[in-house]
Length: 307
Image 1 (cartoon, rainbow, N blue to C red):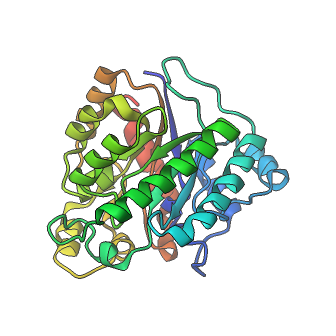
Image 2 (cartoon, one colour; image 1 turned 90 degrees about the horizontal axis):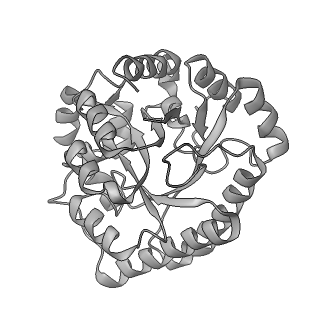
């Protein structure tokens, strides 16, 4: 395997740029490097500076490269499309101004990637992890979301040469097995790949190993996270938003939760996956004092089992 292990600002509680408790972005870069990572995502739009003249020297100082930027927003509502496209241009412009990632042997598309995630719907947020109670989009609204995803992906690729990957996410309108299958039918691989996340698959009631095997032909990028089974059982029995569950500690360092990472290591070898895997552990930023220890523990565990 040729695998590049990366991390993301969500490990420091960075999911909403308007949260007043976010740690300084410089601290996130410094601690990611101290924990042994050489790649990091940009996080939500605007957390890391969008000015390459500011960001590139900080990356160089820490030895980090940017593996991906993220559209984490409402992909469904037509009035939000101009904002989605504005973010697409802003992220991709920045990514092209930063030092490029080297394409690794066997890797389908070189990073960095543009990760596309639907978010911002109260009814789905409170139904995260509950396929039976989560309201589905009607055909017209699903079609609108697919149109918006295609527009983002086509700009990213045809204007900037950035590969778009779609990320099923707890609390969004692409979360559960039926929605993932429908997405794959509606968005061809030449338009966008998948970024599957082991933690979000498990949260949505899917087996991460089985799901990665099923969609290996569409898999361009991977996210690894782990879930504390005791906290997971608690929060699924409450009326709670997804990130409130994260603040309760539902995500834990890799190797300390319920997901079978030795089995995932074997599968990644079997599938011949080459490229980038990003470690994540969403939390409340007020608990970011533990972030360095946790991301270091996740990196050490993955190294110990062969990643």
